[in-house]
Image (tube, rainbow, N blue to C red):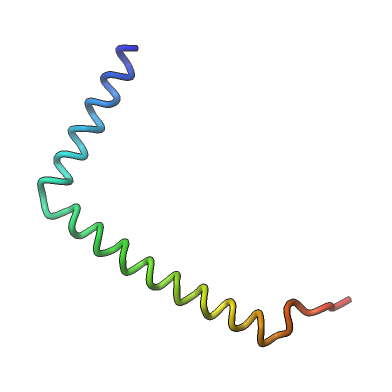
Length: 59
């Protein structure tokens, strides 16, 4: 049980350091950029899927 307490203490300290500095803002910005990039990839993949005819039946 003591190991869990130490683990959560370390995690809280790391979260506090990241939250009280500008690093959290930078990571949030990067996460937003990645979200939109992968959203664009999803839309392109869906368009390609429907343009090709819902999976080609090659044998």
